[in-house]
Structures are given as structure tokens and as C-alpha cells.
Amino acid sequence: MALLDDVKLALRISSSAFDSEVTDLIDASRADLKLSGVLAVKADAEAPDALIKRAVVTYAKANFGFDNPDADRLRDAYNMLKAHLTLSQEYTAAGDAS
Image (cartoon, rainbow, N blue to C red; front, side, top):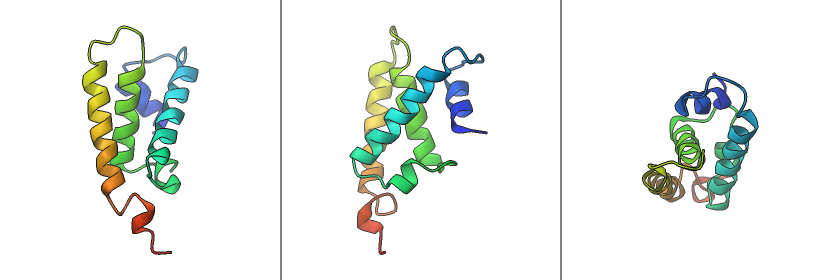
């Protein structure tokens, strides 16, 4: 399943009406992860691992729509996951021995 489909499923969207907005959220989350120090090869993977995928989904859930009562909680969850990723040598240049 493509990442767009996974994020749409998490957002409970079945139509393609919001594909552009969801794609923008996916791109923004990946850019934010890279800006924070996550390796581009990890953040931009076509089939991201479970932690990157969870970060992207959480970012999208926090930022999709205008009246989201869970936005603050989800934003905090995303920031915590992002912090863990940036502290891991597996996800940052600190762990890149090449």
C-alpha cells in the first residue's frame, strides 16, 4: 500500500477529493523530519519503515482539517516521535559511517 493510501486510511478518507492536501501534508512532514536531522534516505523512502510512517501519519492527523480537537495531542506525539528519531544513530548522519 502506498504511503498516500495509508495516510488517507488513518484520516478515514475514502475519496480522492483531498489527495492534494494529504500529499502536501506528507511532503511537509518529510521536510520537517529532514530539517530536524533525519536522513533523507529514511524520510523520503518510497516504502518507509514503521517509525517514519507513524511520524508521517501522526503529522497528517495533527494538521488535517480546521476543527480538530485532538490536534494539540497529536502534534505533541509527532514532536516526541521526531525527537526520538533525531536522537537515534540509525536515522541521522551521526550513524552514517560512510
